[in-house]
Length: 464
Image (cartoon, rainbow, N blue to C red; front, side):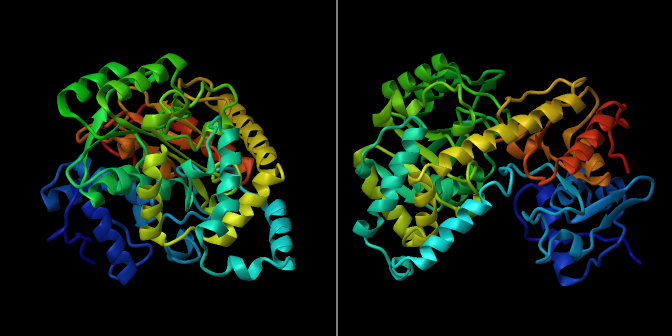
């Protein structure tokens, strides 16, 4: 059989992602059957006229998306469709007790909320309000859900009246609506140098210019932010001050004060993503409390209750509210009343607060497990966070490490995935501790990572 060569004609974006896109299409069409052995990455690079690093990165991303699997000493193979999830899609978010150990998904621990949601669903079904929840909603109908949002925000440290709160389909939808409401094509959006991956795609879709602000070991650098504001007049800054993805940093009170001051001096709108805020009991006050007139605060119930609820809350200055609600209407017409009602009942009866405590305790337990296994390797973490950030020893390239881990059945994410600036390629990986339902598989995955860290890399190439 002739070796597989991807058709890259007419494709756009980074070459390694073009290869992955072609790979996924050929797998879906059957042109690249399950168990097909792919050419070594150096041979594919020679055939395509690309660097071996590009094809190595493509294989690493294909492994991360569960398109491929590697076998030590044999090579890289197309993963059977059944092992990519019941619906046949690569990178399935479903949590399985078999197949690759997935430490690449930054989702909360599953199962904690299930009995409580079952109870609430029973109450909704047996009560008399279900027909109204299945119909279109008016602002008056939604006031109960908005009121629950103010209660949730208060637990996050944000006091807000009803007319400053908007309900969204989760924090990601809230961020998209915020960008739609505040920025126009060609506007400059600032982000942390390493940041939440979807913001890059949102900016591209909305025609926004993106620029990275420098970071150090303590997080985003106020000096860099101030310098860019003086030079380029950006419209907004998107940032995550607590348990930052991917670096795990939490900004100090001093840095939060500095950022609030910079926003005021330069007329900059702050978009504060605080989805992890409730997991860290000792965090400083949200930036939205320091510059409320300049800040849109974004949070959700996903990291503390259940990601499948898709319920988020925005707090914004009163004059921005109409534009935010218009963006919600434009993108989804309305947030689903049933899921919003579930979240509201859990918040209003105190269950959501207890679930946040349980999630925090479970995360701390997983962090202790990681510390026992990876204690000899320096990494950044927080005792209550859901992920860790691990700089790799000298000689390891992040994509090569991820590919080597993937070939051993463990999925992690290279630092380059979070880079907001072209050419940035940090020699680090993000390891998520909460996606795997059971601690035994997490322990096995961390042990594989520890074993890889303990051995020298094969210089300049993937382990195959």
